[in-house]
Image 1 (tube, one colour):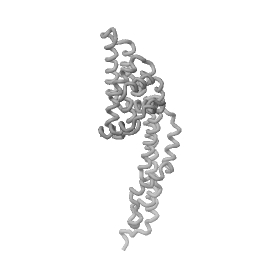
Image 2 (cartoon, one colour; image 1 turned 30 degrees about the vertical axis):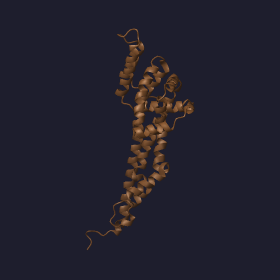
Image 3 (spheres, helix red, strand yellow; image 1 turned 90 degrees about the horizontal axis):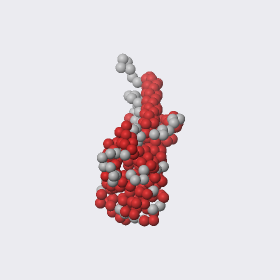
Image 4 (cartoon, one colour; image 1 turned 60 degrees about the vertical axis):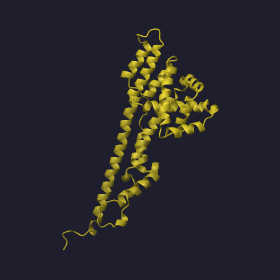
Length: 275
């Protein structure tokens, strides 16, 4: 995987494009998204290593400055996301930025090279890291692109909504044909049985046109969007509960329809007590 990705990078290198605004946006977007994928402990180790290197360049090696103390407290007790902490650092600290950026970049290179989903943004990270001039250029402009993190957060919310709504598509009972074809009735011929694979395939083609999908989406859109990581966790629970309720309702509704159909079909079923 490493060799294949390396070959792709070498084939696609355009210096003019690498210094464009579009490349800077894509690079920062990939960085913030990757940082959020790290476990909290991993991210803390990166920050601590950068702070340690910064401290080595200080005149007093035996005491932490106020900035370091505040950052340690934020890492230890704060509830903000990794990307929010990183954006705050890049907004506020000029001396710490290049140190932290160089450490992050080394980790990002490894993650990009061994990525299973080696997309254009991962390729861009490697291209930037291969040239000192590019690294300096991107490092100097980090504070200009901290707002990219806001877009990453918006994408995170959209991904949550889509993943939860997809659960409705993966629930066969949300297909109107399910209750018509798939109930236990001995009087039905095998030809009337519709395999679940077919039901789910139809669901995938219906996608957002599924009436239960639309109902759940309408309810989700009534919820206020979160503005920080704490609110996001609460929002996640709420959105999950909405979809859970929709799924439970449609399953219950389908069972009711099935039972009613069984009753209607009962005169055609031979009674075990019949002579």
